[in-house]
Length: 163
Image 1 (cartoon, rainbow, N blue to C red):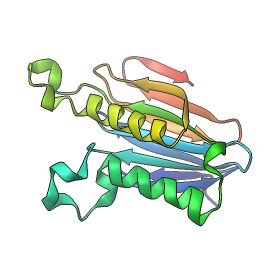
Image 2: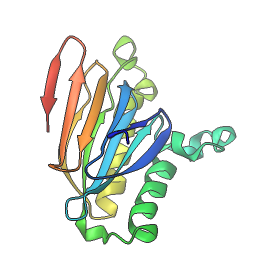
Image 3: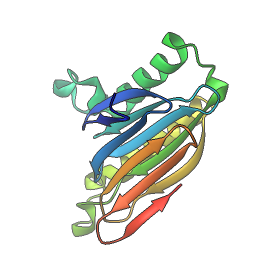
């Protein structure tokens, strides 16, 4: 059995310890990990855009948008898998300013909007963010290990870190 689950862009997956979960190429996209330290179960979402209501024609892929993807992952963990919401914690990474540094148009800062939307939703659910590596002007690749609840972050030209 492969010990690492890969999450593609505009997707989320659930992971059970001792497996790990990873996603590549987070630029303005945001990686959101929801995890339960007690059960060793976690979910990782790789989300592209903050709000599905802004782009109605694109609603067919719920996992592309923070408001729908994060809700679906949260519901799977809490309702379908029975994890009490009070046991969930979060780590987030990505949300870079990939294009907005070239213009004053704040609408192009998708990374900042993704981060703000995720924080708003997590706060509304009472989920604490225990680690964050967001913003700046570079992409990230992340790997979450539910055994020790560490998020490993690799960035080209910047290095590696663990939160």
